[in-house]
Image 1 (cartoon, rainbow, N blue to C red):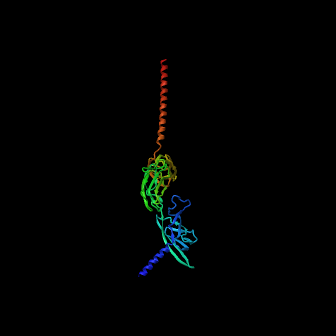
Image 2 (cartoon, one colour):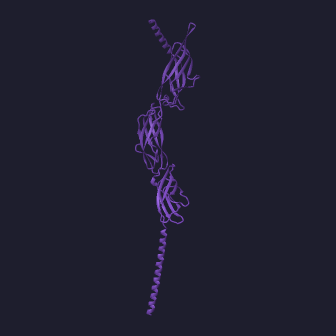
Image 3 (cartoon, rainbow, N blue to C red):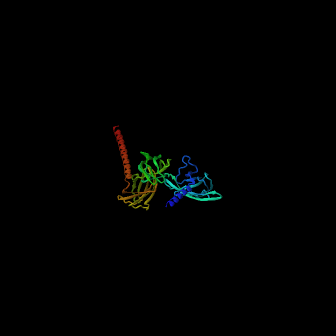
Length: 410
């Protein structure tokens, strides 16, 4: 039993000695970029290509030949081709105390979260020693495990959950949702909101947030105001963010939040009215007016009447566009009996700049009468003429009377 135990201890000793006859130093690495970041070339991020090298030293009293170094990376690493055999480097010979370096290149998956990731390094070699004209060889085969740190980077998207539309002169509450779509934690996050000429921030514009983890959302609430003079259009407010990454680097990001200003046509902005009517036994006339009392152009205005007979069957008439403070009138030739009251229904259809359709209906009760205004003017004219004739006759009569009196006195 003791003999077996002694053999086992000796085997472990020999194996350990063989394994550490070749010493593999800890891996050295540098991020391979077009413009290397000289401040932190050894900080690896997702998506990076990494130059990796190992120093191999023969620390034994025997020479070593046919040295094969193979790396087996785990997620998120992928070996890139830089050696004749992908992921394998070879050294032909190392004398006692001699060292050499082998090189590899790895690619890091873009979606890798922050973590230490494993790399296996396998060494196969032949130890040999010549004694008394004979060569003694021994195979070396061992694996060492290393871990390389990967630091994820936070990447943000911004969304709003209560719409980005606002009307001029309106103040609106808006929820801004920050979504960390990256792979790293954003620590000590500061967000500044900056308005534009036509859409401004009302109240606090700087917000301090807790750390935002990958896949986590954080919400802030702000007030925005659209100036009265703002025309229809898209106006961005800018979110400027600063945070500290897990690697200790200060990061920043600028994201526009597009706000859509929409001029709304209010119900009382458009006025439909009866401009006048005139009776005629052959064809009476009614005149309908449309006025735009708002600040937004109303487009493609179409007017339709019903409830009365249009002599030319021209019930629908196109007005077109009406700008701010503009109006137009249209006339219809209708059939109407004298002194008869008829309801005339007017339907107006129009659109705004976004092709939203609006509709207004209004009914006027019209009693057709003769044009009494003209008759009264004529009667008044005749009365004046009659009065003048009476004055002239009276003047002639008085003059003749005076003449007769003068002749009588003579």
